[in-house]
Length: 80
Image (cartoon, rainbow, N blue to C red; front, side, top):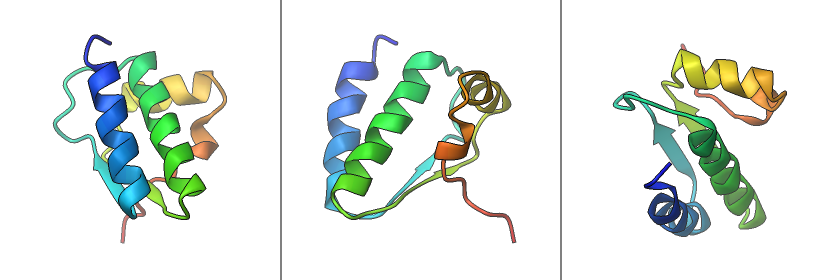
């Protein structure tokens, strides 16, 4: 949560610049602030005509997204 403001600005910049893949494989903890960041970045990407795809969404964050009924908004990388 403490890193959210800095990450928000950087993610918005990247989302506006082009298609973006957010890989959460190294995430050790994720809370509602992380979910809010993902949704914010997705909004920025879509507004700029780009896509944002989430890779390696942690189970806890996926559960939180389902709890808030926003899980279908998160575009996840499909597994081949």
